[in-house]
Amino acid sequence: MAWGPLLPRLRGVGALALLLVLAVLLMAYTAHQQVRQPSRRGGDQVFDARHVAEHQTRHVLFFNRVPKCGSEMLVLLLQWLQARNGFRHMRLKNTVKRYLTFDQQAALVEEIGERVQESTEPRVSFDRHVYFTNFTSYGFKMPIYLNLVRDPVEKMASRFYYARATPRPGAATPPGYTSPAPPHYTSLEECLRYQDPECTFLTGHHYDLTIPYFCGHEDFCRELNNEAALSLAKRRVEAWYPVVGVLEKVNATLAVLQHHLPHYFAGVLDLYHNDLLAAPHYNRNQQRPPTSPEVEAALKTNLSLEYDFYNYLKQRLGKQFQELPVT
Ligand SMILES: *[C@@H]1O[C@H](CO)[C@@H](O)[C@H](O)[C@H]1NC(C)=O
Ligand SMILES: *[C@@H]1O[C@H](CO)[C@@H](O)[C@H](O)[C@H]1NC(C)=O
Ligand SMILES: *[C@@H]1O[C@H](CO)[C@@H](O)[C@H](O)[C@H]1NC(C)=O
View 1: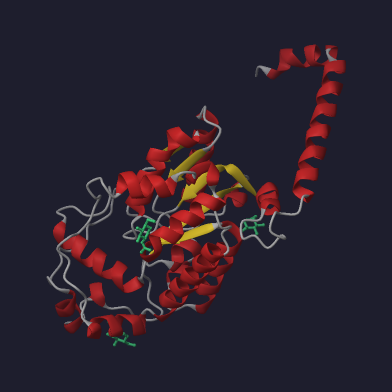
View 2 (view 1 turned 180 degrees about the vertical axis):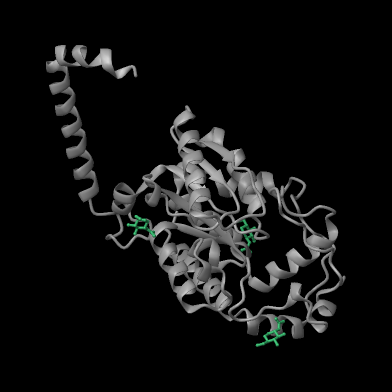
């Protein structure tokens, strides 16, 4: 180890070490003073500065994106914003596995840690389809979490028609993974009428819907209409996600992102309206037929807690948007 020969030299510079300790103490004191500053709008700001200082790091943003919710658009915006706002966006390798074992979670956290260390930028953002992961369990500070959601029936319809429009949907498959059988039905109506498993949602069964992306890797998080999963997902949002965007509310989403996460999203509204809307759209499935009211009602009934979660996020975003300072 290189430390051995260093030690005597370190002892030789005791005065320097003392100075260093004093400097660290001064920095800690300054940080403490900053933390004690009440926030501008009376401390009830959703993005609590004290929380970040104690438990999260502003240097890492993790977009653990829910599939089929417009996340490619937000990733594109992050890629465009990185030079202007002085951060670096890195795409983590996606696989079909979004729920991970303890070891796989450790590998994910370590990979992020390594890439943060290697980066020369002051801030880094990442994206990957993966369930909420507790970085603290692996000895790291929590990143700032970010996500984007969408109306559950719209999301389901988008996934259904995407799988039919794209020859090889989804991402790389891990070894041993067998691809699902090719889709049987060409319309959502037909799929529901024949109660195909692809379009059937049964309480207590496991699905890769929105709640587990916020609840985590525990088994119950994937269980449909599990109250504990819903309430844990909401608690995670309050604690770790300063902003969760809603695809149906793009303007509000971007305005709130720009305000609450300016280090990453300053200028995003202009970029979206002036550049992205003018560019050819990513991953858009133009030919998707509208969903019939019957199908919508049937899905809504079975996806009841997914709707509860979606409505809660829509309300939260709406409140954040209303509370933005008038510019
Ligand atoms: C993460 O794990 C740590 C240590 O295991 C635990 O103390 C903490 O409550 C967990 N945080 C979350 C958000 O689950
Ligand atoms: C909804 O759930 C019921 C059982 O409660 C099931 O019979 C039905 O097929 C489900 N419908 C859909 C569209 O998932
Ligand atoms: C979003 O903002 C743009 C630009 O300010 C505006 O033209 C558009 O109508 C807004 N869209 C919605 C749905 O509010």
